[in-house]
Image (tube, rainbow, N blue to C red; front, top):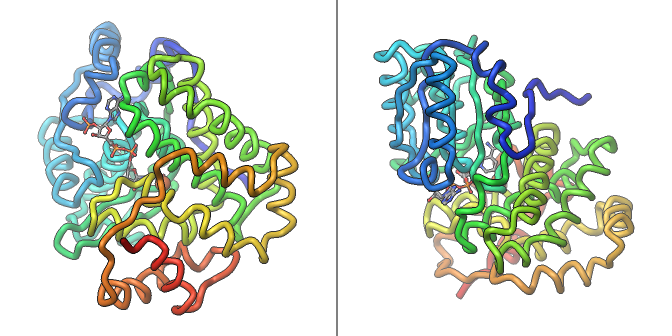
Length: 363
Ligand code: NAP
Ligand code: FE
């Protein structure tokens, strides 16, 4: 089964092309974004005049930080309701997009921050326009929101069909302002999503051509984009790959690859994409015996061998090392093994096997 209720515009000036659909969503938008990227990317310069032309009122909430926390959702909900908004426009990387999804649910169902993860309390949501400015998460086409609880030092996602964005506005021009570092990290996130579409036991053969094309686009364009950040065709290719990654995980979910990365983000501040990338080779080698046919199909589609893929991956500084002590290891292993993501992996590691994988990144 495939299901994707999001209307996708992927082209330069997508915002203008989508205007009649934006107009149909409501009369006052809460614009949800981070501190600077909504402006730096050029989105605001195009969005604000368009909203004025469409006679849509707006209010800006620019309080979303990386790995959005529960408190920022509560604040966003308060502003949305106090201002009488009726839809949301999320601008940025996965953080503002995921935050807008949670604000939508919180406002529509009057949820406190402690109730956000309770699926039984979600009955409706306000519509969301998602404008990605990174090419990593694919959040513009997923039903997921990943939030951080700073008190519990825990990062966890939830999914609800209610929060698929109504509109995805994918315009690679907005991604030219990304630094090489964020470009790399977010592209590695997209690569993880595409690979996890193959790993997941919820894999779907209909997604395979898209997965192979997405990975090929990343292999062919990532280095070029890091050298020439303004290279628009390279940015377009990476934006397309990221969209495919999102469509993929909307159907397959993410696996142990993501579950293993979350504690590295909450405890060591490793950016999300890198936290996936640091285990990419190790996990593919670990899974390989259980997904021989799938990997064969992938590498014949890519016209490269698995070892050539690893050699390409080695060109990027993603195998970072951290101070992971034995106590942390002991604490993390059962938590990672208990996640839903781990359970849909093609091979579930024992505690010893997971410990061995985790130790590959110890300084
Ligand atoms: P992000 O956390 O949204 O942003 C990272 C940094 O990039 C921020 O400093 C941001 O600035 C900056 N930035 C964004 N766009 C920019 C641009 N065009 N030019 C210059 N700087 C820009 O990054 P992300 O990697 O896209 O998102 C990661 C989050 O998404 C994680 O929480 C992850 O768990 C989640 N995620 C969600 C899904 C899903 O399906 N929902 C999937 C994978 C990951 P500002 O702070 O100013 O915005
Ligand atoms: Fe991700």
